[in-house]
Length: 437
Image (cartoon, rainbow, N blue to C red; front, side, top):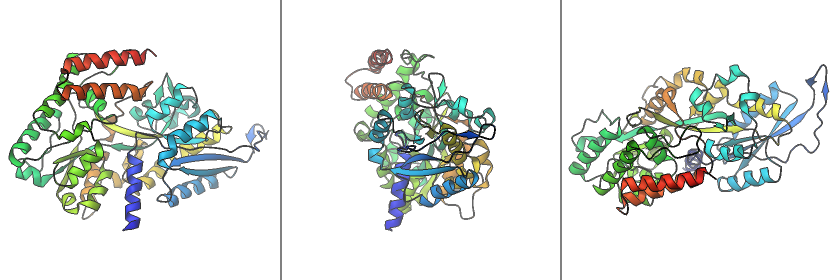
């Protein structure tokens, strides 16, 4: 049981994602850039690869990939450094500031953009061959673009799924085989579930990037094309905010949405107080651990979206700092660990998705096993929508300040302190100030 709990904790840490992961380096004190035999490199080098709290749960996998890579590249050694979750941000920033950055680092797009803004990362459009670039999902590759440069190679993805308690749907007189597909349908389902059962249909997490992703799905542009001004002060923007205001005022979403985030949604789903859990399939492992009877009643459907039909995916990437003295070796390793074969191996250990399009051809992603569990079914749904999913919120300067300002404005409207229109205007003013910095 202890081992299982440690594994589940590792899954949580991987998918709280939208933070960063990463690596550090104090390598290369005795490196010699010698070239022989017509320019072919004969130097023995060591590159340092940081991850975020993947050890010891994934030791066998990571060490196996490193061994395979070193066997193919006998002149390159990989030193794996696993960094505690809580230390990652300050450690990677300190490493860059002190010029001891790792050769390869695992980061999410928003955090990597902070380093890209400093021009601290290798441009992968130049470092990675065109034919290799085309192997990755186009939309995910483009999500790593900042100021016209691609700062990272996509590693693993998570695509949201609508997981719902079919028993609550039955109790509310709803079809247990049909989940809402749009926010409009979700509003009607929420009313019926509340009226018939007294329970809530869903918990819209207003922390992280969730609110911004919902706005994009609803047809709202966040900024103009060059990201110099806010673009959400439109009738679509006001309507999107009004949607959440109305849901809150009519008691169709829990009061806790203003003070708590995604973790609370999982707790309520486990307790049978919430009908729908909009999340990555990996979180069903928590349901399995804490509420097996709820898992048994869980069915899965594609993620809920707006009139645009857009669906979101979250990405984790590999970046190579310019400080690396072995950039070619670092890029080569990044391409190797993210190739289709290695990604499929990783995906079979932890419920994540590959960033290489051909990896989805593996039966693991499109064929249900015998005696398929709700987790198996959620994986198939998630994989099936990946080709039409994208990272909806692009890397932006001062992203944390932008996100906080609009979240606070929308929450003020939900509390009745200001109107939805005023919330949009207030957020627009703040965004323009931040984007002008």
